[in-house]
Image (cartoon, rainbow, N blue to C red; front, side, top):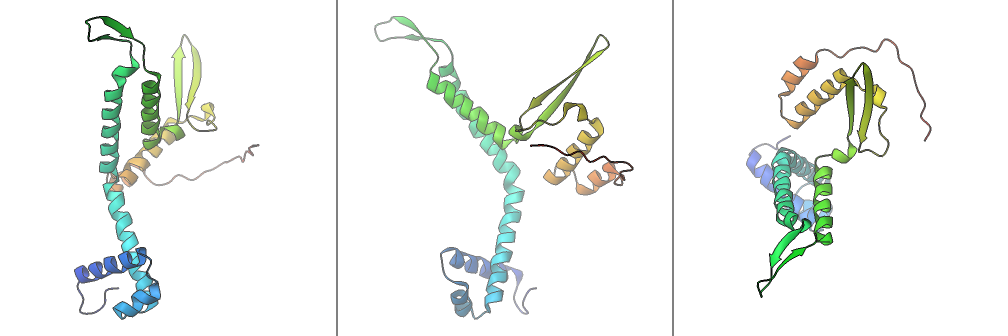
Length: 197
């Protein structure tokens, strides 16, 4: 709750100053003495500043992710030619064919791995359903340590999860997601299956 007679801007600035002091190692009791506050008020100011920083980080995350992916793309594009067979003309005019640079290949693989981790692809299982000549084949591309049961693929569940993710990421307004998902459905029957690890 804001203290009487103090503007939000003043309190936000004070919270920031208190947070920076605490970050630099000054004890909460010393900060309380310097500002004429109680220790609990100092702790509240630090908590408010942390919450503010978390909100700002959450809002900035999509932009930071986009910039990081662009940097990875630029790095991969710069290194990619070294991963290919290429012809180089030496100083004496002789043209030689160079083999792919194995260190460059390793760097490209590292960039690809980093991109996959940023996008959460190493934790994603993708179920593929292929129908041909009256036979149904199922396959799973598993990125998680233990792939999900491929027969458990349910398009409705996947669509609901995607909508929830889009709502959480801010791609769709939360009220639109709630409207599209409808009321939660109750489970009529359930079976508990124990997993042995």
